[in-house]
Image (cartoon, rainbow, N blue to C red; front, side, top):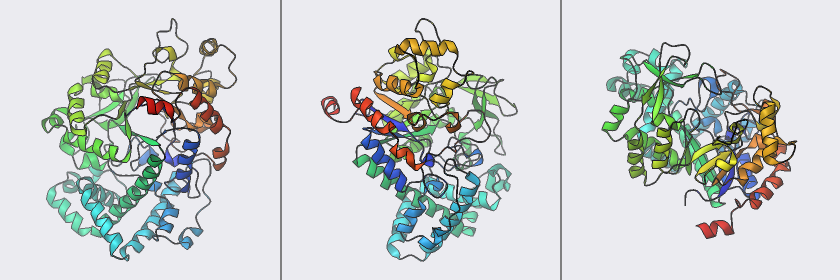
Length: 508
């Protein structure tokens, strides 16, 4: 059964504690699995795990197949012999409460370069494991490693600004570049090997304790990515590789000018001709590293907002038909099932709902969006939830619940009065009111951001959509593991029938 009645926590690994400036796949990740088990949680939801670039957003990754090598545990590399304790002894004093991405990237790259030097002198077993990994993943790894190599040699410039034959991925130029830069390419392959070794070790630990991962896949991919560079015919690009039309959303709750994301659109007609092969490969790869997958901006499969690339905002766009249910029929046949969550927020039409329901996918309910209406028509209100959905107190794009409650621009007196009338008493702990409502819902899955469990305010918000910088950097501190929220969460999880045990055995 993909979805039994359960609950979990939303926490991206970068937000874990640790002495190297960013959360990673080392000791604190394992401690967090133990935390979830002690709190009777069965799900750990993360954001996309791909390598980030400008703006540090996991939703604008350099590849939808590769892993974010900033998550590689340096202590894990010491244990495996790729680094020594002396190598990491003089690590900078990084901030505890947020990620300073520039400093972290510089330090981690230096450490990973040292690890590669030792690997090159390593005996045969490690080399054989590495070669086997490279062979199994060659369909994406070769292009990604060369893409990163060329990006490094071009001082980080986007691929459209490279020499024409390299930019347009001409086979002769690609073969020559592989040969010329073989050692740097191999180093980028090595970093991916390390990431996936550590990730699968963590995932096996979690799965063996009954904790499953919910991953996240943006519907669109970044223009400056190995995905687009190596598959240009699948995207809306001109002859030199620049996007002609780009993705975004019209004006909404988050922005009066809409959101201009900048991703190139897919040429769905071209993709349909080979049975959506690229998409199926992408989903298979992602579902090999997580157990359940949330697809961000699900409504784009039914119709998507298309903006001319020359437009400065997303206001002057238009709705264009997507591939619809035919896409999910192909994917279902290829994957043998759809352990997928549809992120169905925003402008949702009956056609989008019909596509979601035809595929049997659960949608999302966000409790911060439920309040202040009249007559109970709001589908986010708890009494309107259906069993086949995922309920959240808030998502990575929302303010924390405490921040939301205290901000008069987000929560009006009418909304507060609605919440208090609904729960039947004055609200003094808005985060726990939303957590209780989520866990009590008929939704088969309830997810709570770690910031809400800890009762943190707007300074701990993960992302503010439309803001250019300052996002994605929040980190929890070690004392969070001893916060009384864990015991309170466990008690509510048991009260509302979401704890592992007898109920699951009966339903399974």
